[in-house]
Length: 344
Image 1 (cartoon, rainbow, N blue to C red):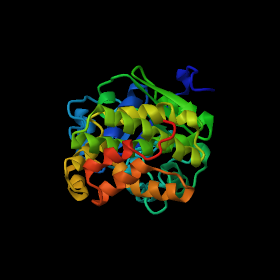
Image 2: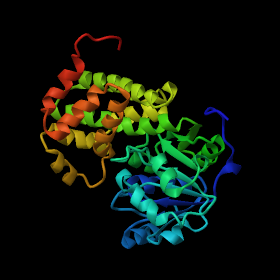
Image 3: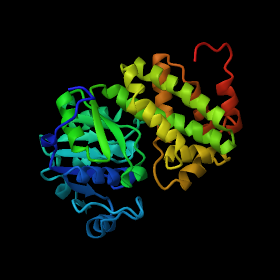
Image 4: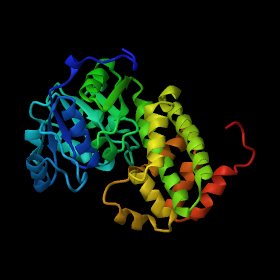
């Protein structure tokens, strides 16, 4: 089955679990419920789980959004995971491994496990699907990842968009895509897990750069230059690790890049904008009430790039700004005036 084929409703899973009740985990619970699934959503705090179940609200992360009746919150992992056909995980990437150690024996033996996360683990430099494979000791055919231009609040308001579901097993990708499809959210499928995951990670880093130059006060020309050259960096990196060019030109690459760079709803864009306004890295982390995955992924991505000989000037300069060794006002002129430019 290719990504342009219409999927059929009889492939939808009926009982699913979502781990993580932040903005994206809660929004994806809504997507799944509006697609016909019964959703158990795990929230770490009992009071948040109670609000989700009783009031059908998550006022901390999605104020003003009504959740479907089919979404029920719980702080009891065993209850959430019992009988789940698919398990969607939406926790901060750097805490994934420790969370998996807790749930490993609770996930049903035949359940598909789906990563909603966009990050690279510090130290190991593993993608999220690799951490799932290692910690859960399940085959790649039971693992899928979701990525695309998916700003949570817009989707929670049912503004139409699309995403990519990727798995090495096309049947796995297809059944997850069907479960995650409804009138306002369409899922496509591919088998390029590497390209899909790296697209979701790398666009966050470019979005931080866009936020920095926005915070400094530079205009649309500068931002367009960084987005365009950023896509080249993303593609070169992903292809070096086995990803496909067409994946980076699609929803999981260019589509996600545009949405994340252009929207004030993007946490990575917001973090970059604060850096551009002169806040230190530690001050930015304190001000953000949700994780900006791009900040945590800069180091691991540059380590991977160095090992493969991939040049990433934009990401490298973001790292310098984070370290306080580059004035944010100097990031854009360097990027747009490379000596001896070749091609686009």
